[in-house]
Amino acid sequence: MISEMRRKQILELLKRDGMVFTKELSKKFKVSSMTIRRDLKYLEDAGYLKRTYKGAILEDFNTELSFMERVAKYKEIKKRIAQKAIEYISEKDFIALSGGSTTFQLATLLVQSTLSSLTILTNSLNIAVKLIEKKSFNVIVAGGPVREKSYECIGTSVISTIKKYNINKFFMGVNGISFEKGISMSNADEAEVAKVFIERSARKIVISDHSKIGQVRLGYVCDISDVDLFIIDKNVPEFFKKGIERHKVKVDFV
Image (cartoon, rainbow, N blue to C red; front, side, top):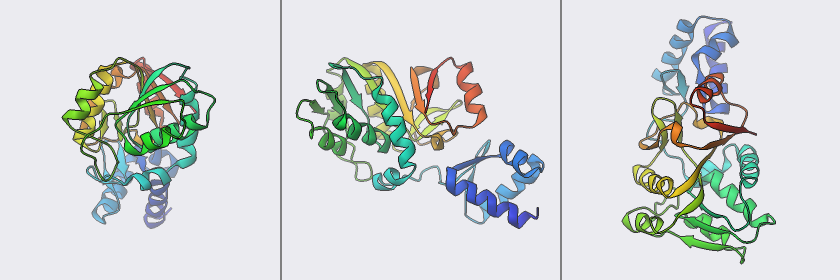
């Protein structure tokens, strides 16, 4: 296969999955890892991608998609993840939801579910608005200044509200999952809020699609080992499956 054709296919994979891995591309195209690294360097110089330690991602480190852009991305996968997450929620639970497109899917399905007696704490305005559609839910909003891209409240008033409560389960949407750099979010202020949710929660559950794996974002939240459960789709790279076993963290693949 000539290099132009191979690079075109790499870009198609990147647009579909959001990231690619050198080792997997080398096997797929039956060329050396060095050849793939040259391809990725060529595509990076052309402005199509950003190289990472293990491959490349479609978006820059500091790029933050709007909420509506994130909702549209991997929508069916996020719905399946949210459906699985509901299985971990029981009547009379006190749960917390971070902002994000996957947690918004969870909120939508909660409203449609048979669950009726839940107390739900969130710092996300759009998630709160969705949840109050079900009048039997006790919805608590940790309010403060609102970020335009995510509809999430941030700041000291949000943190003070969260610190008042002991939470059973925290369902967290994330922007980056890395064994070296931990769980991260695109915005540092949102990451600080997530840290407090983690501190006040008995169980920490990350709900995420596979595109976040291998990515590192601006705001550090916690280490992989601080998470009790990952709910994620099956389209994960092999290195994640092996790494998560080493960290002895439970994963529920959907």
